[in-house]
Image (cartoon, rainbow, N blue to C red; front, side, top):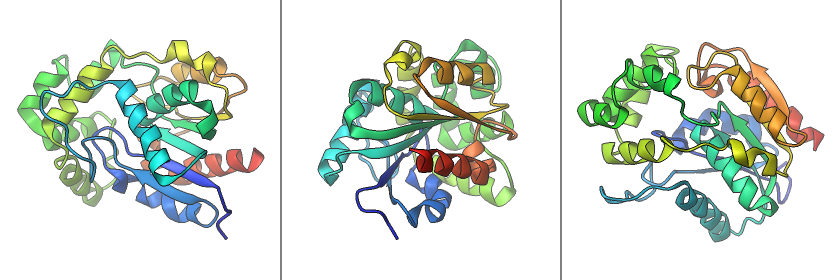
Amino acid sequence: MVEAGRYYLAPARFGRSSRFWYHWVPALAGRYRVVRRDLRGHGQSSDPRRDHKWSIDELIDDMKGFLDALGLDRVHYVGESIGGILGVVFAAKWPERLKSLTVCSAPTSIRASARKALTGGDRELTSELGKVGGGGWVKILIEQKVISGKDQAHVDWVVREWSKTPTHVLQGITRMLAGADITPLLPQVMVPTLVIAPSRSPLTSLTDQITIRNSIPDARIAVVEGPGHEIYVDEPEQCIGALLRFLRSL
């Protein structure tokens, strides 16, 4: 039975629509109303102009507007990668809108050390995106274990889905993230928080994940052993199990 008033919000992530969360729905929908939303410029959300100036403030305003439009006062929020970054910023600004915050594979910033994983070398990311497009870029990300490549059918599907996101959207968001750092905001997060931490992500070290846990008051951590960054795809049972144990404890 779905408990009244209990909502789980799963925002889609950079380059990926809400369809990428589908495999989590059956395990959660028996008790929570699962709401998946598309990031601006992704999936069924509108495509900003090529000259659009992206900002994190705008994206969290989108999230608040989405909750307001659906009449959702408070939700359990889960964000993966950039979704985790946005979740931390949102929680620091509007803690009253969240029952809990879960961040999965969320970096505190996009460090220079992640450049090889994002481009397959030392190339400038937005220029590389202009050359290869979303579909070409995701193949690089799979090779670098940023995106899951668990089997060929999955790879083919991911390439098709990433190709649907306009290249200028991907370029705009990468420019936005280049100088972003949520570290100063972590102590300001005053909602129950779970960190689902990948043990071998090329984008965020386990040390960084422990920093998030130690910096957010009373945060908890679940370390997930997986082959790369996308533990929510490669090890969904571990991730969902950690989430449900956390939510039951609140």
